[in-house]
Each structure stands twice: as structure tokens, then as C-alpha cells.
Image (cartoon, rainbow, N blue to C red; front, top):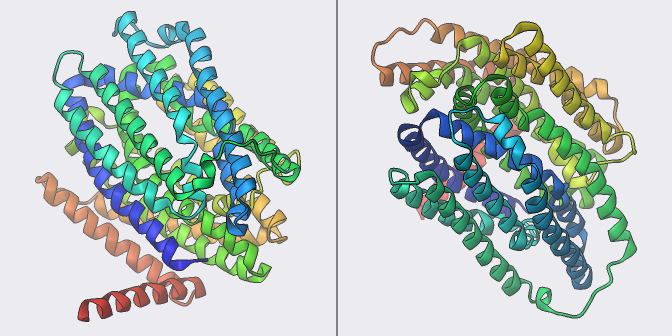
Length: 515
């Protein structure tokens, strides 16, 4: 693995994401203040509906990304051109299908949305969302070759500039007449501009992509892509049933207000998870090359190190979410946008269980193990169906919409907790799943104790000043986290490895500063 490239990709993403996060929170604060809960709920609902329509993409981007690793490493220009041509054709078809099907299901939108917003307004917003999604497919396919060639930092930098321009434009128009429509038009323009530049950049960096002559792709690549696309189609449908349907259920059984409140929590979770997920996705291309070049034992050793890092990061994230969620949302959007602590605990628990599979997800993606056996891909579908069934059942039995939705997700998450690690341990490392879960359970207990202690101590903090109260909770939680992890794992080889890496990084930075 090229450590410098991996670090550059990760650091460029984290730096860009910090800026994007700050701008995103500012924009959302103004959104809540000037456009209100109903429009915020409508925005969250439309995002969920568009995510459902985007399932037609079927995971082609991920499958293509994996298929490009070897030809990029071998410099096989014909194979790369053939793969990219398939990608272009598929994305063009997807754009057309998204528009066609979405127009057919337009009446469903009027059924989901209550009478708080007029139908003609809902239709205009829906149409803008559709145009944004369909247009993004037409030229975004070139992104995948840059990502697969371990140059994610290029995409990160371009997206940062586009996002900054979009945020400033949206802040400028939000208070004006038809502010939400202008908000969406600015988003569309900036996304298209970023994709146009990356299309041009990929043509410059990979000039063979501009050649016109037809290339017949080798059958082995076609078979590999088709196999992974089929598996990813099922996986993406399942993922949508787990995560994309929450807003639909909250709106359909509850109201746009409930959806608006959840959008605050989901935005924070999304911001944190995207940083965490991209740490792993940024190394996936490098990981794919690493697995090709090293022994099984070296690959498994790397997995153990990254799994420990997965645990440490997620414990840290969960502890701070539990303690600070409601304080942050109150300061950011207002007290009318928070839920009671039991609901917050369920949301954090669901996120923890899902995110603890990210290390396994990265190895599965790097190796292309989306369907090592025909039945494996249906594990993900089982999770999705379980989520829908139990969410609706619990809503009907209890009459508590929010608890029903999120407890249904809790029940279904068990399938993901078992399914993805099973594939990696069985088909990549050929190891007993009990070895993985014995470690997973130890990690879970450690996380539970750390989060429980931090929450208990922070509940005793009764300081009138919001800023001082939040600062006190941050200090307490950070101290508890450091003591818990340091005390329990100071002899752990993975812990020592990461401490050594951290010290080495600090020493290198210190040496550069001394020059």
C-alpha cells in the first residue's frame, strides 16, 4: 500500500469535509430559520424518494471501481476504455429511467405529504430534485477512474470548491421569494460544474479515454462486472430499506414535523459517518492493491489493526453523540428540534452497530466479495425486509411512530452485524466467525461501559450557560474515553501499533518544522 497516497487522500478529504461541515451547518441553520419545519421535512422526504429512484444505478459505480484496479495497475488501456464505455452507457440509461419512472410515480408524493403544503409547490420541488439527480449521471461517470487510480484528493478538492460556491449562493437566496426553488437550482448548477471539470480533468490525465474507436471488452471483465452489479443491486435495495425508508415511514405514519426533527439528528450522524466512512473508502483502492501484493497472514494482520481502529473511532463517536446530541441541536436549530433521551440512545446504538462493520465493508469492497456464493447477497435483502416489517409492526402495535421506526432498524441491524463479517472472514481469510465475534463482543462491552460512564457523569452537569455546559461535557467525555481505552487496551498489539504510528507522524512533523 502506498502510505503517502493513502494519507494524502484521507487528509484531503478530512480537511475538505471540515470546511463543508461548517458551511453545511450554517446553511441548515438558516434553512430552519427562514424556510421552516415543513419545508425542511419536505427536503428530507424528497431526498429519501430520490435515493429510492437512484437504486437503478445498481451499484455499477462500485463494481466498475473494483474492476478498474487491475487494469490500472497493469496499464491496460484497452481494458480501461472498454470498462469506462460500459459505465457511460449504463449511466446514460439510468438518467433516462430515473426521469421516466419518477414522473410516473408523481401521485405518490401527494399521498405522502399532508395538506400543510400545496400540491403544485410539492410538484415543483419534486421536479427540481429529479432534474438534479438525472443530470448528475450524464457526466459523473468519469469520477470513478480518478477514485480507482488512488487520486481521491483531486475529487475532494473540486467538490470542496463547488460546495463552498453552492453554500454561499444558497445563503444569498434563501430569504428571497421562491427561496427553496432557487436553493435547489444553485445546488444543481454547482454539482454539474464540478462534474464537468472532473470529466475534462480525466480526459487530460487519461488521454486514451478520448479515442473514438470501439473496444470490445474482454469477457472476463464483463463477467466480473455483471456478477458484482447483480450482488450490489440487492445490497443497495436492502440498504435503502434500512436507511432510506425512515423518512418515508415518519412522514407517512407521522408528519413532516417528525421528519424535520429527525433530519437534524440524521445530518449530524451523516456528517460524522461520512468522515469515518471516507477514511475507509479512501483506502479501499489502496487496500485492493495491498491484498493483491501480500500474503494472507499480512492481509489478516492489517484487518486486525483496522478493526481496532474501527472500534476506537466508533466508541469515541458514540460517546460524544450520546452526551452532546440534544445540546448541539438546541444551540443549532432550537429546542423544538430535539427528542427525548431514550430515542437518542436508540439512534446512537443503531449507528454504532452499523458502523462497526465498516472495516469488513472496506475489505469486502477491495476484494470484490459482493457475491462469493449466490445466496450471500440475499443476507443484505433479509436485513432490509426485516427493517420494513418490524418498523410497521411496531408502529401499529405501540402507536409510537418514532420508536417503531428506530427499533425496527435495531432489530434488522443484527443481519448486517453478522452478514458482512461472515463474508470477509469466510471467503477472504478462511477463518472461523467465532474468532471475529469474540473480539467484537469484547469491543462492544468496552464501548458500552465507556458511553454509559460518560453519559452518567454528564447528566450530573447542571450549568446554566449552554456554552460552558457543552464544554464541560466535552472535557468529561474525552477524559472518560481516554481512561477507558488506555486502561483496558494499553497492552493490546493493535493499540500499540496505532500509538507508534501516531508518535511517528508527530516526530516527522516536528522534524519538518525544525528545518
